[in-house]
Amino acid sequence: MSVLIIFSTGWAFTLNDTYALPEFKTDSGILVSRISGDPNNQNQIKLVNTMTNSEIMPPDHVMKLPVRIGFPYGQTSINDQGHSQAREYGDATQAAVVLWGKQLEPIKAATQVTLNLTFIKNDALFKSQQSEVIGALSATELSDLNSSLDRLSEMLPRFLEGYRRYHKAQTEREFEQARKSFSNAIKAVDLNFNKETGNHATFEKIQASLHFYLGNTLQALGYNGEAINEYKKAVNKTLDKYGSPLYIEAASNLGWLLRVEDKIIEATEILSAIDSTCERADRKKWACAYVWYNLGHALSDQKQYQQASVFFNLAINRIREKSDRDKGDIRLEAYSHQNLAYSLVRHATTLETNKKPSFVDDAQKAWEKGQTALDKAEFEIPEYFQITLGRIHIERHHWNQAIEVLTSLVLEQKWEMKATVNSLLAGAYSCISDVKQTKKHMLAIVGFGVSSPMKSKPNISESMQEIKRIQKMCGLPS
Image (cartoon, rainbow, N blue to C red; front, side):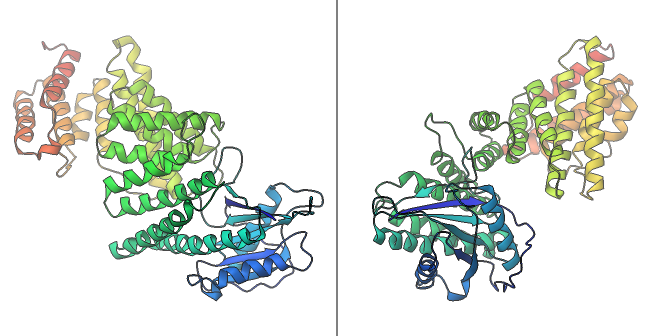
């Protein structure tokens, strides 16, 4: 008998059926359907018995579904109809996972069973470019079915336990519990990895998803270095045959965290590589919006403002295509607009005077859209977004408006931003001939250079160059 175990992900839909199905009382329930092509339901019985005999899987975590899912007559391949049905039954029973499949007609005395594992409430397991599939395990002997299910029974409960704890975690202790569950699930896969003779690629894909979630948990706990290592493992285990990354969510999080740790070049490299994957995926994956947002940030950090604006626009357009946007999507769109505004106005500073207005106008529009989106979603608007508005006023020679906006900011302990604000204010006050205020803000910049923590020390030379640039705009000698 050959066995194919396929992992896929998805969200729940509405169930339209006559069966009255009980709901799981756990967040980690596994619903096992009858297997198509198996009239005596022996495979379903075997699956349930194997899982409930596990020391890890409690009996009330597994339930039989008295129907068969998917595979219309004559169809043997994975199909969207089957996954949709699985998601419907999973939603109706509050299951975390639905196991379903088909037994094929014997060929040369060998029976083949295809098993699919559909995750109901999970959106970031590794998926291939062509389908929802994570991977496949194949076996040639009947005993290998039990062996594969034993491994599944060890790994799956731990993963579901960690996943449930991760999404409900509020405290450090709860995140530590999720961390332990994901670590144990990885060990369960690693323990049996070398026992597999032809399934290394599939096990690596399963491991990748586990490393991704462990990375998320470590990041939530503040262990950024360890989280980066886990994200790298997730990315490296899912490279294509040319060495290009395929795991969009893991690569995006890796790039973001590398940037947080000031590893800008490395962040740009991984995000640029996964951008190529997004292009090959016809830019359809929602996770690509986060890739482009993070890549825009990394390019902006390197003063590549025009290129950065391209990726912020890509993120905005991708989110707008989503029909069921949640608050997280709205916030990402708003932040993309704000960072687009920043990139446009910073790019405008590099242009000749006659070419500036259109970029400044576009920056103003993007800034307003970002503010409106945050306001509608009832999000707190970050104070530092006002700095971009101050820059817009300066590029329009609206000195007093810039001063009004920038003097309203507090920016406690944000040393680099304080230096930026003071350089803009010093330049604006110069242009209205207020010498006293100009000196005050120039001295403040020098003071920040002395009093700020080493890691947050502002670039005083860069701040002074900004003052000279603004002074030149209003005709003062530099």
